[in-house]
Amino acid sequence: MKETVYTRHIEARLKEAMEDSPVVLIQGPRQCGKTTLAQTVGNPAGYAYRSFDDEDLRSFAETDPIGFVKDLPERVILDEVQKVPRLFSSIKLSVDRDRTPGRFILTGSVNVLQVRQITDSLAGRMQIIRLHPLSQSEISQTPPKFLDTLFSSGFRHRQNKPAEENIVHRIVAGGYPAALRLARERRRVAWYKSYLEALVQRDVPDISNIRSPEILSNLLALAAAQTAQLLSVNGLASSFQLSRPTVHDYLSLLKKMFLVETLPAWHNNRVKRLIKTPKLHLSDTGVACALMDLDHRALVSDRSLFGHVLETFVFQELHRQASGHKEPHKFFHYREKVDKETEVDIVIRRGAFNLAGVEVKASATINKSDFHGLRRLKATAGKHFACGVLVYNGETSGKIDDKLYAVPVRSLWEIT
Image 1 (spheres, rainbow, N blue to C red):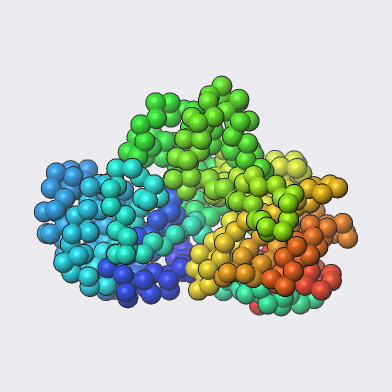
Image 2: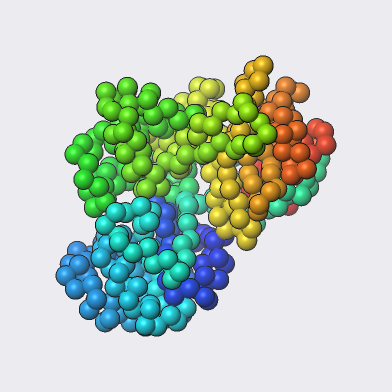
């Protein structure tokens, strides 16, 4: 069977960065496609390739980083560069002698700016490109139009045909290319579990001196069960009988490895009752479902859990599409308590001011009360409010009120 080759939406940003930056770093979780992307762009341009997963090569670079960099080809891809922290200072010296754009393409499976052993950030010399697992628009090979439609309030009334493929199957499959190549669901789950075990056993010791990796695995599983919920470090700490600072360190490590993300609260200084606790999201729903032993049947049977995982699915799809967009986007959630708690699952800021809200509902039907949070956000944001959308598990798109719409989940990657 011919292997699917996915076009990554962020490729244009990578090429643009290579035109004016001596060093470009592609960072994201292991197996999300960093090496493939680097070679797709670099191979036609004659880039050499070196991987620090090779222990001998890594030993040479650690022993003599200056000499190693000096002997590199003119243009080179250095894979898993976080494994040789001392190399960054040597790359800086080399770049300061020759600032030719596009000399180095680096890849890293951790956030290198948070690795203590890396003493030089290459500030002013390096541009960082964040690569996520595959978005649904990349999997479907459709152009990512949702964000532009959102900020232009361009949703049209549309009655979609029933989907041939259940959204739940996409949620459980996740976005890792290697997992998606496996036809059977149980084989994908096995892949995700082996993947996570390898990360904890192989990668964690390279970047952390934690003494109990099994606690990290258990914490990740607990985080999966609480995805799309307000982060409670105290609650997590009590579950493991650990101190709050210790749990905070473990969470920071999971974030550093791009396995979990925290979504900050959007706030407006005029509003005094905002709840500013961040939300916790797993970085991929395939990972989350594997950690909870959920196949598509089990996920559908638990409506509350399905709602949380669907919210993470929508958030990650929007986040992934935004990473390749020419405009900057920042993501938040919104909660305010007046007479009762009001919330919007996802708030997106484009540029300095423009705001859009996305509320996620697992039901196939909608009612007026589902728009309460979006209406409140619209009133609070005032002239900066571009659009509010309720994303639900139905088939009809339509306008509900001025700048307020309901659209099916599939619209995230099927807008034409």
